[in-house]
Length: 268
Image (tube, rainbow, N blue to C red; front, side):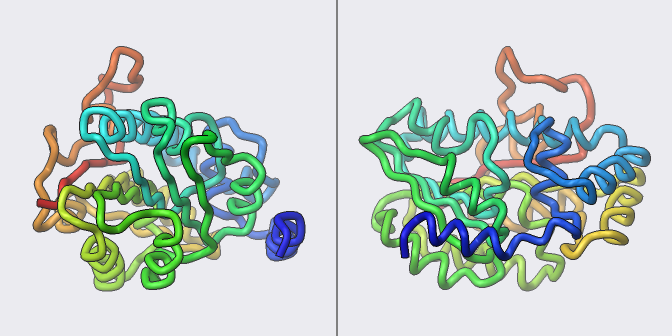
């Protein structure tokens, strides 16, 4: 199938009448790839949790710091980014390939609007490779099978789960998916997670979201998030509010609590 035909096929699956997490997140980031239902829900949620756009921006900055560290100091040149979201500035491949132009990145998402934009915008360097998979975190076997076309599973890989585990509400299913992906990765690989955490205002915001969306959102506590890293070696400072993870001079929101936590662990 040609790329144009694939994009047409994906576009036919897009339902703009139902709010979608990737498009609401895009709205909070100041993007243009969202629709009236996404903006309406986004505005309602911000009324009860005004800092949610802060969470979105903090997560985008966190991704950049994580990828710069992994592609640089840690020497990782392969990334499996599951739950990509709508492409914006400083996507995983852009950050990684600035550090190492030969880096290879596989993006995974099951939202057709994300995939349409991915095919249009996520272009690799000539030396590296970027691929895009239409797949779901809850079904990891096809992810591993298709990602092996691009990534070498005999060498370390960074598994990126940024703002996606919230949409796997069943704890057993979430842990099975993460452990299945990690088991396929060799020693020296990394797991990076960003995830919304519980607070009274975040609980209220999640309830607003779940009342209007086809994709229910589940918040977890920091302790519950740490369990996804069982058997891994946490990179300092461990699991923390995103701006507190290895902040750089340009990192914003360092002096406030952001109810989006993240961490990086290494597979020994």
